[in-house]
Length: 486
Image 1 (tube, rainbow, N blue to C red):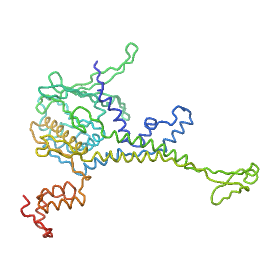
Image 2: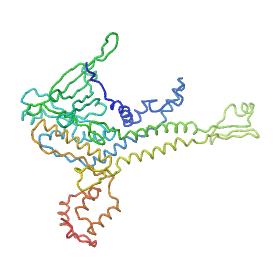
Image 3: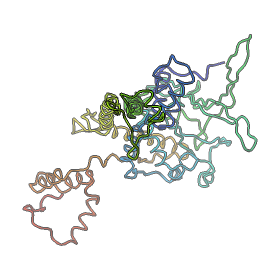
């Protein structure tokens, strides 16, 4: 039997990094539950119960500050503070409110995809088609009633275990996608028992799209435990006319581009520093606990003095007094503070801030001729690139969905916001922009476009002009608008 559960080498290389990022995003409880995975024992050779108790206290005092999750929340917030621009044909409008059949809206799912691509640099969108029994495809009545319609399902990177491409005509197309999921093996009405199954998307020998479901069986063969796979179900999705598809309706989403090749996770370096900061915190808090408690020291005492005068005990505090013999003394012994772990924490905090800023910092990138005819150089941040990649992936997925319900080649618009609050104009930049407009170096439309992108203005030009005509004349700033508006 074929090894359906085979994982590609790229997947195996990236899976440990994805796991570390997932644990960091899950927060302190998850990190501490991982125990020595992220916080080694100071003396691992000591397996005594006392050392285990000591390590548990050492771990409990450590502080994990969720820098990774806060950074991703902030980045997603920069994109989602403005609603995406979505224009769909009538046939696809139901996807706006329920994109995957579970009640999740299209913008909500897009935010989840954006979050994961920013974190793991990988994800996938699968356009699912319901099984249609009729050879003639779906009817108009079924589509209008919503009985049969496509859905777009998001698959996280660790669930996409295998993929292949092949050349069809003059282009390379996906020829195989293997996805892992769960299925219910037993259900008593209260408790479900689940096991793994594999959904295989492939192009058959005729380059027709086929879906297969495989399950796993553990068997004993010649006294050895072996894993065998069984084909549970197979079907061929059809379009609205009852014809098979000649492509797999699956779209990869990445941080650099949307090819099948996975990108290195954007958040890995930040989360690795977050773990190192957690380890420094454990040492720092342990040092504070051990050295932060002063120890009283008495000198010049005899055993007779201790027994007869002090009665074997010493009371400390402002309302107690300690009788000392002639020549005796008392002091509090306190170790010098250990600042090295604290300094290491501060250093890593600065590095984490710098790494987080890099994700929204604009960088010079070379554009292709199709992206910009006149501009040779464009400025894009990592966040902008990811937002554009997610938008492009959804346009492709929605195009696949349209093929199921209609033969119309209607234009689909899906654009996530790329005008971020972090790029707001400073007061100095606003003054410089107005000065350029007053000196006739730029026209009104150019000035207002930059003001909108900088978060200062929000009206469109036509609305601005109509309102401006009804307002009182503004103060003369030394320049007239006449001859500058097109």
